[in-house]
Length: 184
Length: 150
Image (cartoon, rainbow over all chains, first blue to last red; front, top):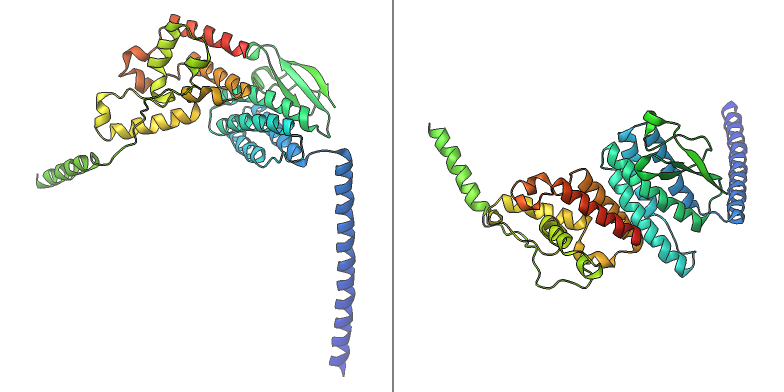
């Protein structure tokens, strides 16, 4: 008799927790739906955001004079670039994007297998590719185009912060440069 | 003493053996319309320099040296040529977009400036392929101009 009571109690408990879990699941789904619609409204491209994010990680590694980290971020960036999907853009934009992506991928791949000097050389052209990419795809965050007049006759890069941290010189001249343009 | 003989024999057989493994030869009779020299107005002096110092590995046509007949030298060459063409092929220059051309020209300048190209192992044997300091500057200046004009 006691046994029977115990099993009924257990079953009830299980049933309650199960419904509870389902409820939570539903809530989670609602939540994700909400996020999704929000993103659609803001018209941002998640794949482009992922590329930009990898680019910033790469930049930070160069600022920190960390060749190994920069190489890793370079190969991550190359992968994100290859995963980019241009299908929702106009034919003309697609052509331009394909060109940018091809060029940027090559630079990212070289960064993945080079020493710091080379990494920074490639980062310069890569930065140009990035700003051209963003000009087409747009981005949901505010970006700052920064400029160092000393490196290779003047070179720019993108940052998510208005504080200058120089990826071309790292600790040698960490704060050399200025904000040239704010991209919103 | 016997062991030395055996090893020598094995090495000899191996050396003779690998001579029969064929390598891919990088040679073509025609120069495509996309060739660097055909799309740009390249001064003769620079044309010649590029041909001698770069085209062996960065085009579809290699002027093979005598030691290409011997393995394993031929393998090293094959490898260098493959890698070189993947990075930059002057014969296919015009198939690149302007963005890619500028990118490549920038890399060419950097490579020459830092003496990474032409490869040391190449200029060691091809004495005429190495650049004097004056030639280097002239070439870089010309490529800079070309880059800015694209």
